[in-house]
Image 1 (tube, one colour):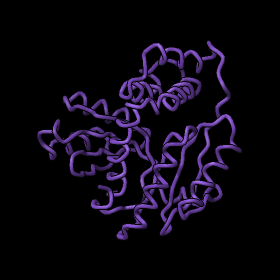
Image 2 (cartoon, helix red, strand yellow; image 1 turned 135 degrees about the vertical axis):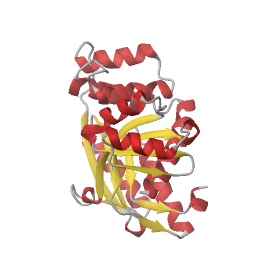
Image 3 (tube, one colour; image 1 turned 90 degrees about the horizontal axis):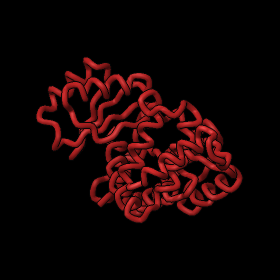
Image 4 (cartoon, one colour; image 1 turned 180 degrees about the vertical axis):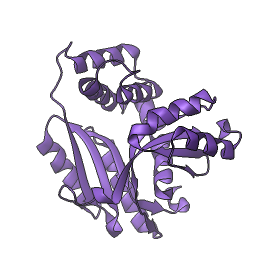
Length: 247
């Protein structure tokens, strides 16, 4: 799982940079719209909407815009027709990549992503070509600075129904089944743990270690280009890139 932890840290840093530029506003608006359309307007009952609102607030999305996006999702305001799609492909060294997108023009999105893969030594594949290499999981992230005892976290998380805990330099990731993520989160909060983020993610079952600097550069460029596309919501990879290349 180390590949996921490293990439999640990159994404957290990138999110802060994008937030400063307002680059994520359209993406969080779309997520709120679709989350509302899918499961209703109450964040307490709609986990996806609640996490979308949390992300929106982190990146500085105005409250009025959040309310407007919820209205659009509930049919109270006119809204573009958005379609959720998953794209799958492979980058350099056979690294698998999943791309979750929301688009009002699937042909445009597919064409753009196909170009990105090709430009960076990879290829966009057919549905099913890579998703079997990932496992859908709930991921609850805690900053190590807010956790006094890692063993206590492990015990409480397990009692609440967590599957596992992964540790990296500055965070703990509590892994759950998608259906148990809310219960585990509530259990941790009940014991006064401070949650940094909660999301549903696709984690690699096995990772591919990248030890060549040039290959690492190509993979990171591909992932960054995909992340930066207006229609792309999330990107997942099974690349395990050495720390010195990430820096």
